[in-house]
Image (cartoon, rainbow, N blue to C red; front, side, top):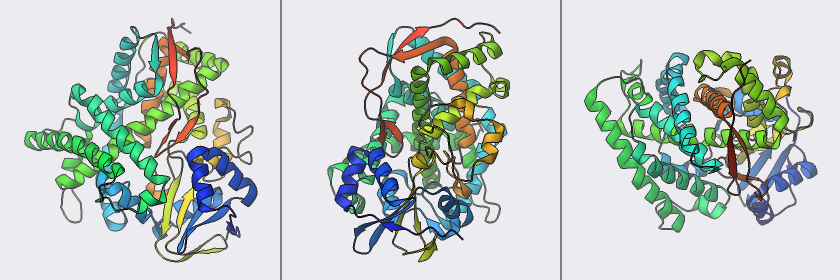
Length: 453
């Protein structure tokens, strides 16, 4: 049994909250330095927040005892009005049923069907770059991954709606990030006409008609187009013989929208930022891609032949995990480590800090894809590297995301070299629902000629 005991932080809630708004990395570093890997912060009478930087405790909660925890009630209430009760937010028997129904949509055979479309959509973006010597990196990556996930979900050309969908999803992400750092906004009911709730409702009112129209069209056609929507509509519960209702399908699609494009977009953007910062790593990546592809477009069969490409992405995911924190709440009073934790406790596991800990990673704040050898990954303690989460609630789309990021990255670097525009402000992370950027990241692009190996 882990003997780690939670230490109570002497910082006030207002000090911690301000730290997370102004300098989240600084406040987390300070908390760990002063109080260790297991910290208790008194939020208010009867409400305590535990912050965890311990991989052993993370493994205990996420893998060994996941059935004893749930997503925090306040967070689910905050997000339910937008995302409903999809597999990211649902619990218990309903979650297990939905996860089982959705799983076939993410098996290897089904995911691999999307490989050619991932490359084709990336090439369309690169064609557009020919007339744009400078790009807004985050905007471009979000537009690309949105097109890819929309294609995977619906197998339908809704290119005229991608800007609308992207803006609405971006607003929901921003609102969720603002709520997550404000106890007041977390606790206020969603029906109150606050500015945040109104922004959230406007975004939902834009997305719902689009989703329900696509859903109705697919139900009417009864043809399996090979997309995730077809899979969801065909899925049957083996025990009850029931299919998903329109509302359940809508909730799952909303979850896939946010999980399937925002996280991958940020991970790809951070990867390209680090390549621009490290020309020697970029050169090594160019050499591998040029040698394997010889100037042609990448395809599914090339993925195993691009190990360094994969390692570049793995290292970006280590330094910039899309999910900055993983939140849980006990279903009943229990012990974590050597501490008794009440049912009302909020628990935040911080992959961002765990994956940058010098106890597990040499020179942890340096971008070094070469660290990801097979032997290195095997010897890592459990839950020291878990960018997609861990345990039964590990991201259901992790295989899709890894395939997408490898193919997109290979397609981009084969044709273009990206660098920061002169005068670009230092690029810093922004801790929202996912890990984005504090400022616009503008990059200039230079076409390159692949060198055959």
